[in-house]
Image 1: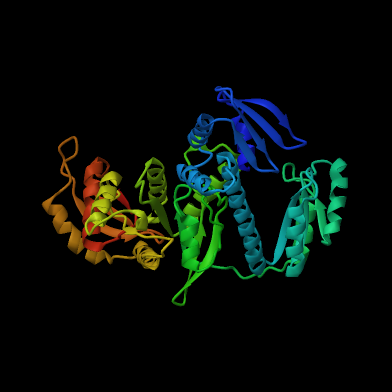
Image 2 (image 1 turned 120 degrees about the vertical axis):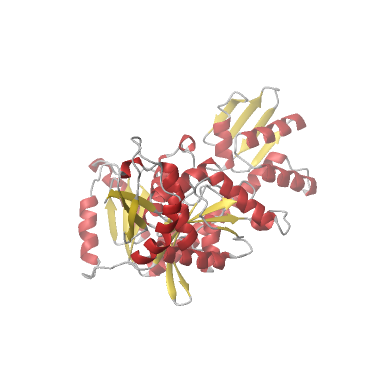
Length: 471
């Protein structure tokens, strides 16, 4: 939605009152409590404020409602001072917003062309209720030049009465056109049948052996920028608008002869801030990407550190027993000295409590500072996750320490003895402790055992499971 559209929504608040709204001319006139009017022209892209007080009020309201940032407002004020002809603040804000959306559309075109090179077939979806739009024609031109197999889906054709809507789309010159409904599944069976006749699939079972690295975090911390920096080209769209990435996007990084799958994910918001269906499903796909990865890189903003939402992502990664790395992005923006990194790392580990085995690296996706060291750490964590400790070594190293610091006695006063230890599990480390009275081993002693294992054998960045069974 453009800034003008968002202002239109803002007008429904108590701060502004709609004086007139013309959909035909695209003109919106608002009135503030101070009595001054703001006139918005969608086509002319002008906002006129009668007084400076209203200008300041408008700026403050836009910031408080999250429609623009303080940086944008500050930049607009600077541009207003330099502008010739006495441009209004609102006019500059709208021009800035239009440029931002023009950049976004250009990035979308670039992503379409990248997808063309990778796919076997294209499902080009258009809105049957709205009809043919200029952007549909532009996308169709790109698709025709690609010589790819294209299926044009005229969506929202919920009943046969909407079949006539697809007639307009024949002018795009695409062969396979279907009027479908994603809502009730109308004609999707016919589409799938035709799709299967045109595509060929190998009977061989593909066993994935490549490292899958999921880049997760809150919105606008630089996940897509990091992926693009690692790949060396813009695989995902990057803007200053939080939530630009809506889906999880897989990319293959070739690193010294090894292929690594990078999964760029949508930013995870608090549940109370998820207001759109598409955002809800973006969160679902992000969690699925986290569940299917080998190692998760949680990207943090250096100016914010670990916040509550970050802690929830950490907890989910640990619960799923995924390798985990904390990457503090935008490190180039922070004023620092030689001891800043250690102080920052210690503060993070203190906040994370018992999850203090996670490596922390400081990077900048913008300047590419230490981004490839991040890949080296991810490979190391992946190796640690699959590391096997021989049973004799576990018992020779751990049992003497356990004898020196035995577990507490049972409630009946019976001595609890750990007699044998072995490592099991193929996908992540599971350590099996055989002992008597295993039900009475307290949590604090289990944490003591885990720290002992890590002290002797490593497993940096790798959650582990300790299981206790009767001998």
